Amino acid sequence: MLQILCLALCGLLTHTRAEPGALLRLGMDILNHEVQSAMDESHILEKMAAEAGKKRPGMKPIKGLTDMKVKDVQLPVITLSLTPGVGIFQCVSTGMTITGKNFMGKNMEITVVLNITATNRILQDEETGLPIFKSEGCEVILVSVKTNLPSNMMPNVVKKFLDSTLHKVLPDLMCPAIDAVLVYVNKKWANMNGQMGTVKYILTSIPSTTASYIQVDFSPVVQQQEGITIQLADDGEAPEFPEDYDEGSSQLLLSAAFLTAELALLQKSFDLNIQDTMVGELPPQTTKTLSGFIPEVAEAYPKPKPLVTQIRINKPPKVTMETGKSLLHLHGTLEMFAARRRRGKAPVSLFLLEAHFNLEIQYSVRENRLQMATSLNRLLSLSRQTSSVGAFKEKKLTGFITDFLREAYIPAVNDVLRVGLPLPDFLNMNYNLAELDIVENALVMDLKLD
Image 1: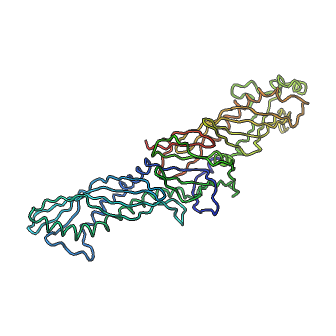
Image 2: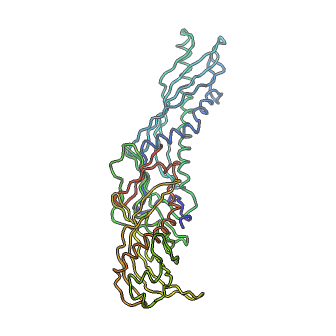
Image 3: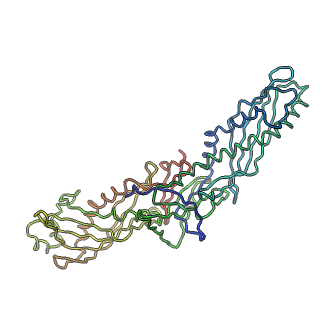
């Protein structure tokens, strides 16, 4: 059942590149949101600024300034830009007020505006295989300095303050803020590395960066409970993102081959036994109704008998996609029996048909799970394998079987699918807001923040 499905990420790179079954494209919308929220959650600038007022080993006191403290750290403004082949260039603009006592015992304030810049390189963690950001080349640039010190003491005192304290101390104090923020961002990948399910996402390569997005390619490995791996079908062409999404937006692409592999875990759940006489809007499910299509049934069973119908899916389900439409193909057998009224007597098989039919899939997201709802698209073929009521033309049963599938079988399939397929858990993504598009060989989720 679908309860056994859950997503994890295995971080071992294979020696040969596997075709990705899932692609994640991170644009500036989500990257900006995640870095800003990490900065807010960590309160790291306030923590780092608090350290500026503490005595540090090897730091000489500044003549004429005592009781130095840092307050009023401004809300940081974060500017990000993508660096192709590297990751993200980050600039954090903020400010703070440094207070103390001058040599006359008067209150002194120096307001500093500064930029912290660094390059955040995206890598793959060797131990976990998760994508991680690592900062490089951090610098602290002073933008402006204002003070309430008397003008006649500014040249010497402020210059010494800047040279002896800000230029030397602030990089050591503030650059760790960049690293600390990235720790918060990197932790938001960690949920993908759980140990709970039968679907693992393996990175096919180190994430790539362009001028518009960061792309992470996954090759999902789907395993049955027995540990048997279900191979993703190679359809020849790797899925690709359409080019008509907004600049800077983010998307998740799930290939038809990947969804096929996930639904293969449910193959047994698509089997069905129905022995109810009244089903939906169908006429009574009895031999009398069936004899309207196959007269030989009435000869074999002059008195109406309840029908028992058994559907067995004997090939793995297959998902196909073309622009705007997705189909679930099912191959199996449909066998009808005449029930016996005497207790303990097995029903008698009337006929066994090979059937191929497909269902149209409508996708949605609920509670961060991919939902599928199906409707009968077409009964493609019926082929008689056995019959205890003599030869008959399968075509005569097309309407009867079509109605049966629509009224009896499709609701059962939708019940199986109702729990939904889990989606990759990364960066606390809220998939419920995503807009879904069916494209050639893939489902694309256009990720939204609000």
